[in-house]
Length: 278
Image (cartoon, one colour):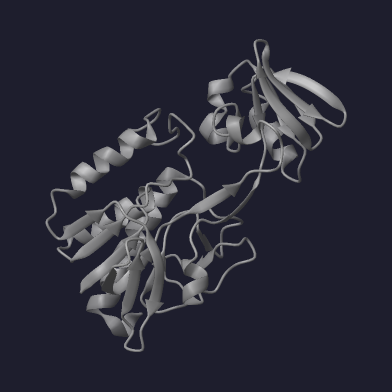
């Protein structure tokens, strides 16, 4: 039986596994190979890693984790997680095998739900963006459109000093890359820009929160405290799939996800060695 099963091979899961590995706790990290930031070719606003390819980042961390014999990494997805009557967990993997663990760290993240807008999914993470901290600088002095939403005022204020021009557009009906730039069409017409900022819906990327009966917040994310503890003992959640009550939204950030993974790993260890404190 593993002390911890970490599900998810992004920054939150990698950091949780590294934290547990340094404490010599038998840990299994499952990586399905699916990542929310897969469409982008560079991460930004991350100390020592600004502009790094996310795949390279993951490879570096996995190389660091390999130094710890207590951590096993499998490139395999989990299918279901069941909490037994004794408080331990049985997790069925995609290949049909079952692994047992004392604790589970969920780090499977969110999945962006692409709208039924021609071209949107193809350009997502390339010329269609969500986060000005992640992609604003790369559009310095250039033409930008922002899809109208309750957050449009904040986006205009943040991007105004960076980009060359900002145009707020109604709900987008299509996007198309042309020799002149990105053609963004809506009911009011079309504009040609260098980038579009929009906020599609999102959902849990994996079914484990529902399977375990975890408390959820209105944001659609797992309710956690600052230690990454969920409403079910022995289950921890880290990354953008989780939401701390004091924050207005889940934090979609590599750096924040890694921090949350460290807290979740440390919290799992604490509750293993001092169960009365959980």
